Length: 391
Image 1 (cartoon, rainbow, N blue to C red):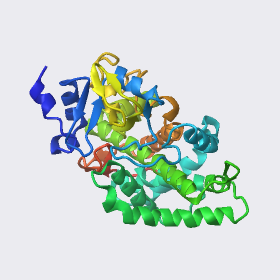
Image 2 (image 1 turned 60 degrees about the horizontal axis):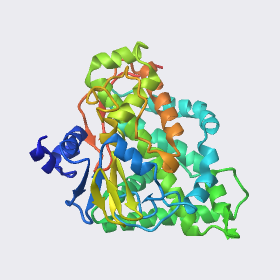
Image 3 (image 1 turned 60 degrees about the vertical axis):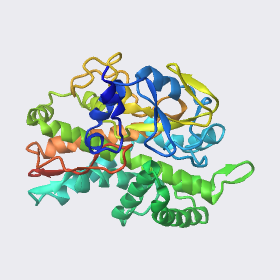
């Protein structure tokens, strides 16, 4: 075991920010459960599939209600523990069930074609800015009944919320978060005072708990959580998958020729390049994982990306294999906190990949662009490409 490699673990280093495989290699060179002291407050990290599974499947021992980022926050919405979590998840789950999601396919296809039509006259364009971000933001706005007049504003707020989750000092993002909350508070009050338009925001605004309408704060927190989760994952899923396919032109050509199974590609991208590299839980009492004692009230990072590359559950885990049959991946978490938007993310990915395959078979990557900023997340915030657009 290379202890020097293990001791070099630094989630914010340029090497690890540029390539999650560096982090994974350093995690596997060290103990299964280890204390990470380069963040305040320090936290423990688990990286093997067995240990990540253990934490996620024991939600009464490893809590979400203190925040799923490295900082301690008050419980809110679905980022909480039962019974609060149970109430809010049941409130919104019907909009994210497979049947409701499948009904969105025609609308998603129309959005995808509109976006590609908009860049049809350009030789070079950006796969993130022009395609991967506007589609999921548009559809989540429509689900909530939020006007889509200024997608860039909503994307900026979503990015701020993601950055604050990972930040050593979230205070620098507070002003924009308050502006977002103010906008959504106005929306909630408008939905509550108007005839029901069938939107998810209207249902949240009218929801009742403990004999009364839920508070404005609860409604806003829930919408923020679902809005951010409803676009960030898909955007990075698409940019990550396309970055891998286009880095080797042969893989993109094989995909366009129908030689790559769509669902296997999506699952392998989720395994190899999970948009969310890790999340956190907090110990409810003293715990021991792999012989390492963890005090009560301590943050534990569950590293999805590392668990996805555990050689005990995945042969040749460091190889991006579009033909792989993936059975065990952690990218949407597990248990009661399994990502409620997983079906939506996969459908959006299918629609976007199908549209690109049909209309941009000569697509090529100009360069690898730029990664998104927060260390817990993995995706491209820029991915410049070149292609003609077929009708």
